[in-house]
Amino acid sequence: MKLDLDSDKAGFQERPITRHQGAQARSLVDAVVEEVPVALVFNGLSHAVMMVTPRDLQPFAMGFALTEGLVAKASDIFDIEVREHARSFELDITIATGDFVQLKQQRRSMAGRSGCGVCGIESLALLDLQPERIVAAPLHADGGMQPAIAIAVSQLGQYQDLMRATGGVHAAAWCDASGNVLRVCEDVGRHNALDKLIGHLALDGVDMQRGFVFMSSRASYELVRKAARMHIPMLATISAPSTLAIDIAIEAGIKLVSFCRQDGCVEYT
Image (cartoon, rainbow, N blue to C red; front, top):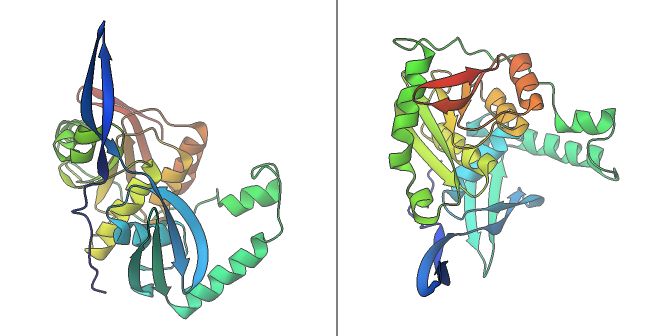
């Protein structure tokens, strides 16, 4: 599948501001990250609307379909068309017939349910909080895990152009076993950033069992669940994990490392 990638889009807008410092006030122009509704439509069927920073939208659609289990593999996605509207985007995604049939069945099973979302066994089942064990072998970095984490921490900042411009986005980085940062995606949402990264890796045919993901955010359950679906052996984050993220990582066999700094980290699994 040949895509018209849009990773060169700025992802921010300049807005007038008044900066107050002490008794002084200055009128300036500041860069503010974009956040727009993006509708994901599979074979003509509307599935979800996400709030996304509008760049890397085709990889985002690819990653979302894979990490949410809507398609079995990247080759089941035949086409992704981006439609831009006045203040929103629509992603028209063409997927294999078998995947689409399963998607429609899933939507029927969810129809008519109401309530708080996570208040019973059926709701928990719908959240898919019981991952299968990943098949990736443990990573073997020269010198051990901590030197690899230190390298990733030291390199991430140079790839965060949107963060430098706006100060308001998350980053998801793909690192080799030694910690070298090979690709970074940014978005106002941490899960969106991970979906964009995984979409790029899938489009490039990268073996996701031979590296790890490093994120500038906390480790939430949905990040671990998405990584588990792609059999990524390790998820490292700058900030703290949640208990559910730890539980899912243990069940899936993913190494979860948080509070990552150049001089240390905390391993939870």
